[in-house]
Length: 202
Image (tube, rainbow, N blue to C red; front, side, top):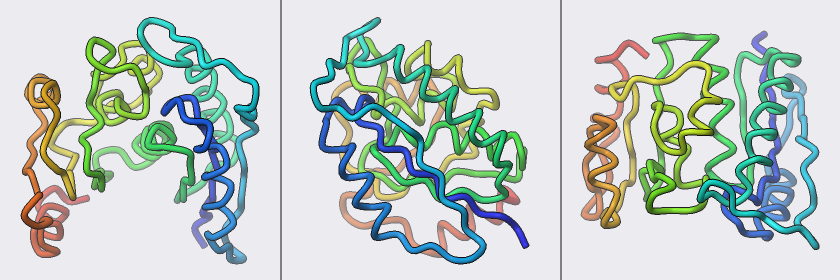
């Protein structure tokens, strides 16, 4: 039986919002466990009384670098075949995707279900949670992108639910070479998603 890890990461620094810490805990309580799922919670600092310093234009950058390294260490120790990640915010997806990419190689694709593309850069945004997909593709925040061991190809990403972009996002997407479709009038169909998976052999 393939082992599945339920990884709880109550990160609040990447979104600079203390309520994300409790939100991750509440979500974890609502997510059921089964006999073949192990739960591990990353021990992160409670935001109460903490200062989220701005470093290189990013809130909490040094702490986030330490966090991704800690997550990597945890995943290497647990060696899961599948990961259910609970956060926090979108940033908690970075290491699990990176780790699974190392395990499955080009057989792994990303369906990014979000209203935002999360390809921002420190030149026009200051919270890491909006840069995580960019980091995984070798862009985004240069310091956190360095922490990605197994970068993804733009063709291995499908964005589902994408809404109208901010002023800076189109140029960031073009630089990365990431194809996208604004879905404010309706999401991609199930058939389109299935065809994309089959086309790439994921």
